Length: 310
Ligand SMILES: [Zn+2]
Image (cartoon, rainbow, N blue to C red; front, side, top):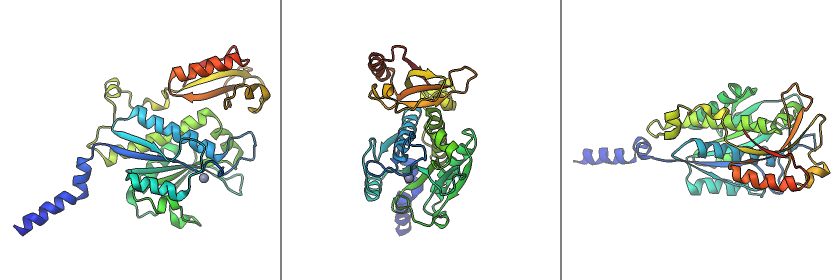
């Protein structure tokens, strides 16, 4: 009898049972820095600060997860430009008892040549964190065409990463590229670059989820029937307001852009046309949101503005 009771207890509390009963997965996305803490800076003052890039990429990853997967709950440590202490970030993750903590950052180096993505874990002993980190780096170096510097742990760093050390769940800190490398900083400052980075993160997370929780169906039914679950890179479903294009490089801080009251992003187009640059506002997850900004910028001196979908 005693043996049966022990076996029953073992069954009840074994991780396998917990996983088998699990129906939904929670992901906390942490955009590094914010508010009075700008993070790393690019040498180009027209570029966004690290805190801004982190937030843009974090939201894109969150949107991809929410819009393309089912049974996944996404929360954020911040959704605006506010200062949040490292302790508060850890506390939020542990109190909410999320399954995954994913911190998003951009890197810097004294050497301007240094470039590439990195995925950090607290220690190589945390197997699930390492597996997730590898899955993300694989996507960076694969389809996204980034140069991967691999997975790093405490032994590779001069300092401990507090958000990784004290969070109790599977946790990784992603460095999306070096702001001190001109080419990478330029790339990270384009909507296209941000989309590619975010979709690689999304695919890396998705691949890991499917592997770790084979019993949970993450693919949305509509996607399944269309067989389109892998189409995220080409179909992001995000809207932008294109306000103008130009032959020459124009500073996004230009007075005419400031009149829109919106953050304007310059994109270098891969084109043989004379118009090498376009200037967009966004992204918006719904066409209606894009439309209201479109109406506003049209009245502020950009009558030819249009909505584009990417
Ligand atoms: Zn950072």
